[in-house]
Amino acid sequence: MDLTHERVTVMRLRILLLCLVLLPSLSGCYLIQAAAGQMQIVARREPIAKVLADPATPPALRTRLEYVAAARDFASQQLGLPDNTSYRSYADLKRPYVIWNVFATDEFSVDPRRWCFPIAGCVVYRGYFNEATAQRYARRLRLRGVDAIVGPVAAYSTLGYFQDPVLNTMLGWSDASLAGTLFHELAHQVVYVAGDSEFNEAFATVVEEAGLQRWLDQQGRASEIDAYHLQRRRGEQFVELLLITRERLRQLYRTRLPPAQMRDRKHQEFGLLKYRYELLKRGEWQGYSGYDRWFDRALNNANLISAATYYGCIPGFEALLSSLGGDLPRFYEEVRKVSESKAARAELCAKGGSPGVNSSPISTTSESGGEKGR
Image 1 (cartoon, rainbow, N blue to C red):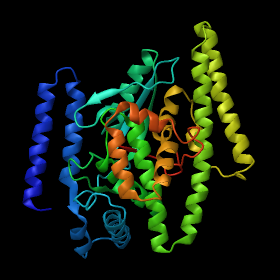
Image 2 (cartoon, rainbow, N blue to C red; image 1 turned 135 degrees about the vertical axis):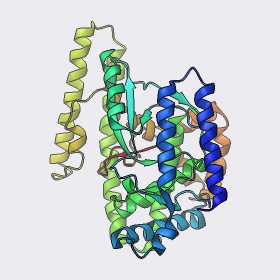
Image 3 (cartoon, one colour; image 1 turned 180 degrees about the vertical axis):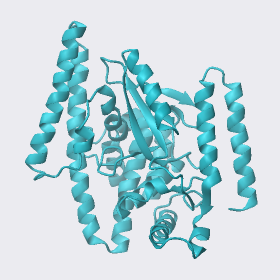
């Protein structure tokens, strides 16, 4: 990485640290750990070209980074995504995840709590670069009667603000998941509305899907396309289960049942969710168990946040892209126009059918484990 880029990065970090002093309404300790975590990522990154040129680079790492470099070029040359320094460097963080996100809702609500920060705006999670710290914060919320969970994050983005690198935490994924993540994160640099996670994630997910289909076609990897569509279908059905449960709980929480009775009914709904999953797994999925780990825990309202955040608006975006004949540059331009109006964003999200029916899996809820974060 050249000296000019390093100087720009240092200046941006100084600005971020200055924000910690000038924003007393936010948790100073929280923002300090965020800045320190970002500085660690910056300190560890190296240009991918430099890593590939190093004869000491392990063959397995070389193969993965060559694949990343090719997919990154495809993103800019064929998908119209930004041609910049994002994901052209590599950072080994020496840990399996980059951050851990805390999601939370009130005990009798499916609406997520939101936190507001510099750059990202208001989001439905609070991210920590240390798992123990995230778990402590989640425990404090639970002690106050809040439903809270901690989710590991394998892919991380600053929306291009800090020339985001590819991380070692991402390299264990399948080729398709890895390429799709690059397309997803770069899409956030095309359109991002501060404070509207649902809109942002749905847009990036649709770009990810369209880009991945074209990438696999270009690579001539038909077997992976078939596997991708199979995973996509499973993800649709999984998310539909979550959204059905979320809506049933929303209706339950609108009743005036006593808290103890409400609590019992809530537990019954999550038990029913697990039962429906078992029926799906043993039936149509013929024993496929890729989501067992997700269900192998006590569930609460916070477990349903990602389904609504990442999938609720997807059908409207898919309908828009289809109406434009799959033309991605025109799609980006139309989405930019829509993004300028809250009413237009809500209208787009309301189009295209029932949430979840046309949705597809991303790493938040799929076999790959950790989720994306920014």
